[in-house]
Length: 356
Image 1 (spheres, rainbow, N blue to C red):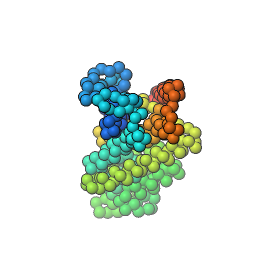
Image 2: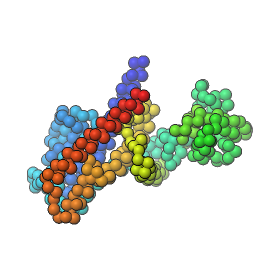
Image 3: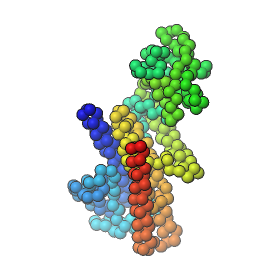
Image 4: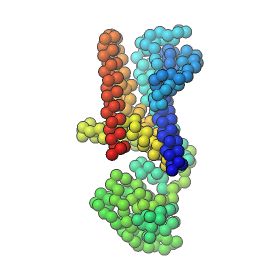
């Protein structure tokens, strides 16, 4: 009991560190471009809220704050010290690059994490443009629905009379089609010690899971980790896949007018902690997905995101006139009201989903 509680606490702690790192890395992207363009950054904080520790390095006061999730870089709007510039003094293209800096760093982080995971062994996510397992059975739990049928080292040759040629991705597609038809059994051909056997396997029928391992209630032998060269290539493919999936998801939410695909901080931590319990690679995989989502969301033209700031200074560049302090104040206040309101709503929904 104590071991389980300690495991849960450590998982939550690791997930908080991971999510905070993603946000801080995003802010670090802004900071790097500020330094490149000699823009004054008075403060860089890891965490938000009350400052617990600070140390001045160069012209920037680096802080650790009490809030466990988040971080920020303070960018001066007017000229700073030691000849540094303010945001309002730099050219338009530099402002654009500064805004894109955080988003770019989120995409880079996702890509680097994917490279590392492919190189060391990608966890089985069940919803990716690649397959990390072979079609060879590795373990069958004692309580598995197929415990009396399959044995370790069995090779699945075909499912529903369709050859899979050792490709679990094909097997996953076949099983998903049968689950969608509410099938609870599926014909299969198995190679066991060089002999071909026909049998009917059982399906758990979990419509929310595309994982063939979960549907058959077994585990497959993983494929060997990729070479560095192939990891670099496959990480590029995976990053593009998830970017496309995010765009499609946002379109579906807009057309369907629902926010079921969005989660708040509580749910993000809960899901991350569950991934951490599955293993460090599973946590890194989820953090890679969170990072690319954070980067893309910041492209949205809303005042609380980098995209909204881009809209503001683009309007100023076109009109050749800065927005008045009053307008900026209203935009700032409305942004915080919107951010806090969404945070409260998503937190309430997260609590309801976690409890009920």
